[in-house]
Image 1 (cartoon, one colour):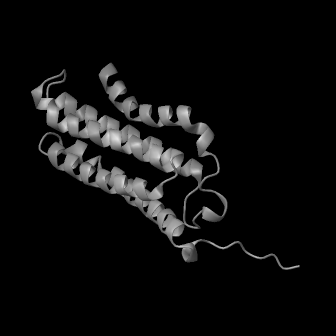
Image 2 (tube, helix red, strand yellow; image 1 turned 45 degrees about the vertical axis):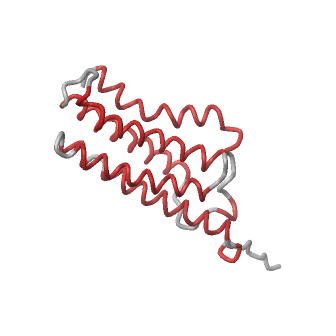
Length: 170
């Protein structure tokens, strides 16, 4: 893999790093405590999975770029343009969820992102089948994050569904 490949693999990580740098003071503890879902993985597991998936998706975009001849040009406009939009929406979800603390709006963006990833896979499939298949773990990841976000959104709208603090018996 050439230098360009490394750039493609690292590019998806730029958004989360920038979001963290600019919003880290607003992130701490928002989804901890009573809001934490019992089936939600630990934060470090989520971070590890997201890092791996962003790297795989970045590599997939490199495969498409390479198979279309590299460089810049019209053949790359739709496949990588759609990918760029998808990446931007993905980064926006992080801001909406962790900074704005709006799980409803984040959920809408996640559903839009899901459609964009499916569209990207369909467009990439004739270009590079492996690249399209490498988007499948991303779709699985979006399913998990959408479920988590849905539950947080539902709990914020319906206090009945919110986890209640347990009473300590003396």
